[in-house]
Amino acid sequence: MRLLFANRRRMALKQISSNKCFGGLQKVFEHDSVELNCKMKFAVYLPPKAETVKCPALYWLSGLTCTEQNFISKSGYHQAASEHGLVVIAPDTSPRGCNIEGEDESWDFGTGAGFYVDATEDPWKTNYRMYSYVTEELPQLINANFPVDPQRTSIFGHSMGGHGALICALKNPGKYKSVSAFAPICNPVLCPWGKKAFSGYLGADQSKWKAYDATHLVKSYPGSQLDILIDQGKDDQFLLDGQLLPDNFIAACTEKKIPVVFRLQEGYDHSYYFIATFITDHIRHHAKYLNA
Image (cartoon, rainbow, N blue to C red; front, side, top):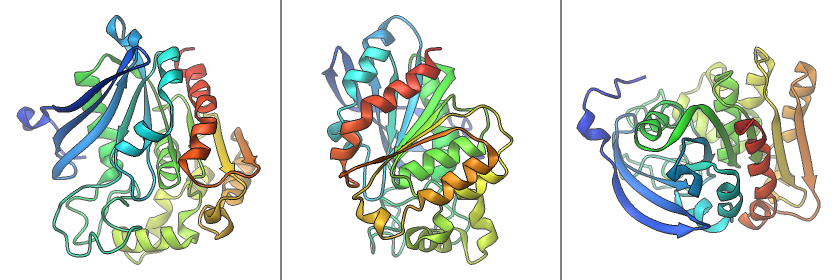
């Protein structure tokens, strides 16, 4: 972890937008990231309750090609977040504009595809530190600047971000009260997306990949209470293509007796229409633990 407070001035936030929504405010900010060595945007929703008390923080991690905008404009999460009094934070999915050769060549690696790992390989390791950004730098920024209770934090996400949410929770027992995911990449060491990303960011030694693979992390999880909710569309093309591999994760959870609710949703695909359909269930899942 880098020294995040070496330069306090760099922690300054610049507000990009603010829109009233269900009595609260949907805002977007920009800041200079220490971990990622570039300017980063993140979205934060402040429910009406945040005007008077500190609220729980719920982090959303988006999937491949997304920015901080996709979730806040497409998922329809605001009403439930407003009602349950949750501050919801949605970061970007990768560093931006780092002028690394090859960063914009493909949609599933580089820009928009940080995979929530800390890269160890050149030329990515200087900027591509999304794991430390999401688990360390961003929460410190949120805790210092917004009315959140740092002891009440949960995390969820979609696809690559579902993978991100699962590994963040599994690598940090006790840090998050709950975790959920929509169509997560559950076993990246075995799927084409994961193999491409991990070989690029983490190198050829596949033993290092397991530290960012939810199915492998479950096997060594020390068993602090964690209730996992996963929704998966049955007609998701990426499920059929072997990119998501939820069965491997479910089997590992069952073996370790880690409670997971896995719902295979008939007729649904990988899109935000699917997310929007079940987002209220997920907000409710987290509120149960965050507001307990």
